[in-house]
Length: 288
Ligand code: MG
Ligand code: MG
Image (cartoon, rainbow, N blue to C red; front, side):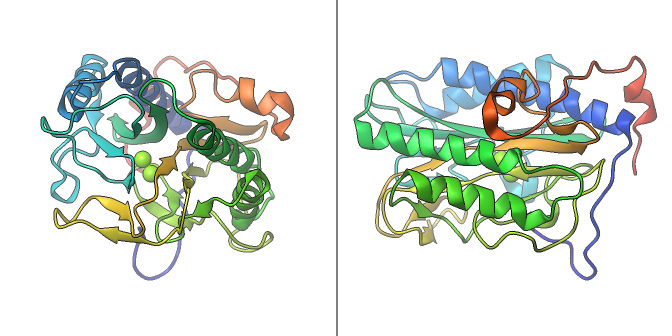
């Protein structure tokens, strides 16, 4: 989602990024709690309540709730739903389902946004591979979130990783985005394309990278609720997302509990940095 007119990318101070890290950790905890509760028979509304409790318990605010009228804390997208599914008490998970859980939280005006897809119990090799490929594509993109890189270096890395894993469709109609004082900011972050284009990434920028892979054709359509995005051909989808900051020390994955050290340190090419939150950072992070 774009700001109209001139494209400007918000640049955060280290203190502001520290508050975004707080928001990111709240999102990580909420996602962990919701994902841990996934089991046959649970409703997506129950998952939503778990996430909302976690976020509010941390003194943060769910960013999706009320966003352009969205009614819930999570987006819960099951099977052929790609993104933006609305939690409800009628949708109960069954063994073998896939569910994308997408969550956003605000701390002191600063946003975090992340998503993961899990299966309800074991699934076959094709679906397991879809999930793994999508998560791996995300991390390959995150590894390129470095100062001096161009924006589409991330896009190209996501696409190359996805293509290397099989004939998955890469959804093009929805993208990642800049993030900071708002959830959706410039620039859009496509999950495909040639490297070396778009703005040069600099320290203090923050992006939400969020590949969506499907087993079939990547084209989507919108359900009558005006939110839920499904694949046009009914094929099943996976969606993974993290918020990452560009720092002098490399990508800092704000919504990963370990800041990204585990995944990026394992050969993806990044130089992650785990930073403590400076005392008092909250108070210095007013608007930008
Ligand atoms: Mg999200
Ligand atoms: Mg997002």
